[in-house]
Structure formats: structure tokens, C-alpha cells
Image (cartoon, rainbow, N blue to C red; front, side, top):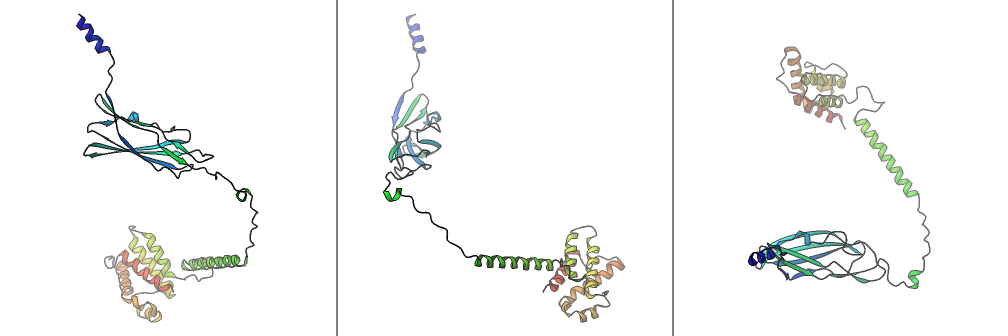
Length: 290
């Protein structure tokens, strides 16, 4: 009976896991910080294989001290000959300015690694950084004396007005060019740039079912407007003599009028395609443009 009670007593006692300390290294730049700067602290810990980090032992964010807060923590591991190397990057941000130069301590770190009931603890004393104030610690008489106000210099307006005038002239020239290019000038003749108009209308047809006959009608009317008379296949010789600028496209124009005759009078649409009609209209529109 005594042995049974002794066993129950031993079972009821809390079990304390073995805890051992291990060495850890901390790397940090000690000086050169002002308000708003981020302090990067790198901690390296090597533990035997099988031990894993206890996430609850990491410091909590926001609350490292009166002048510095923990913003972010990154953790990386790599296998080494002695076991597993853990690398921590702690980002501490300075958010409160000081009146003088003095060291500011970071938080002490107790990083725990567990394997079953065994615990390894890496203890690091608080690292310190040297904080600089926003204002100089000592002000000389020259620095404390307010400076005289600097009067603004008078800038000549003539160069600015000339630049503005040239900009307005350039804008007007651009507007006039595009108005002429797209036949929007009110004083142009009614039949100005017929091939450019035809090319835009043919392009808008896209791949409609009746795109080929419609595009051929549009381009045929453009020839009539360009020549100020009806242009047919039989009158092409006279057309080329009156408009020698179209002779480089003579073969394409003759093919187009032959296809027009076969489509509208014989119902054959195999002689020419809609892309070919659009290409001819584009070439003729380029011929119109100086």
C-alpha cells in the first residue's frame, strides 16, 4: 500500500522539463540612427538536430521600449555540421526623438528550442544603439541668430511670354494639320481627299457579311470623286493620262475595276478580296497625302 501511494504522489507532481542554455550571437550596427530609422538586428543560433523553435518565445511586436518598437521578424534555417543554424532578423524602428545623444537598449531575447520535453534557451543581453537627436546638442550664437529674409529676385517675363507664344503657335499648327489630315476644315472642297475618306470607311466595315461589295462601291465612288467624272474599266487609259500620279498603282487599279465588273455584272467575287481592296485604298490615300 505504501508503494502505491508513493507512486501516485510522484505522478501528481508537476513535471519540469530540462532546460539548458546555448550560445547565440547578435550582430547590429551600433551608431548612426535618428528618429524613423529601422535598426536591423541579426541573431544566429546553432542548435543540435531535432530541436525546433518555440514560436511563443519570440518577442511581441510593438512594445520593445520607450523609444523603439519591433516591426518585423524573419526566421531562416540551414543545416550545418554542428546541427541546425537559425538566423533571425529583427527590425526595430525608432519612433521618438531625443534631446541629447545617448544609448538606447533593445529588448533582451530568450529564444527557446524544444525537442520533446527537452528545452534549449538562447539568452541574449539587450543590445544598445547610439541615438542622435534631430537638433544639434549645442547651438552657437551664429546658429541661434535668425537669418535675414531673402527677397525674391525679379524674373524677366519676356522669355516666358515668348515660350508661351511659341507653344500656342505649335498647338495651332498641330490642330490645323490634323484638321486637314482628317478633312475637317470647313473651307476645303467637298471632294477633298476622297481616297482617305474611302480608306477610313472601308476599315470601319470590318468583317461584315457584305463587306466586300460595300468596300468596292465605296472605293469606286472615291475614284469618281477624285476624277470629277465616272471612272469605268473602259476609261482607265484616259484616267491614267489625266492623273499620272496613279500610274505606279496601275496594275492594282486595273485589277480592281476588272473585279468590279465581274462582281456587279457576273456575280463573281473570287477575283479580289476585301483586304486587297482595303490595301489599295490605303495606298491611294498615301498618294493623296503630300
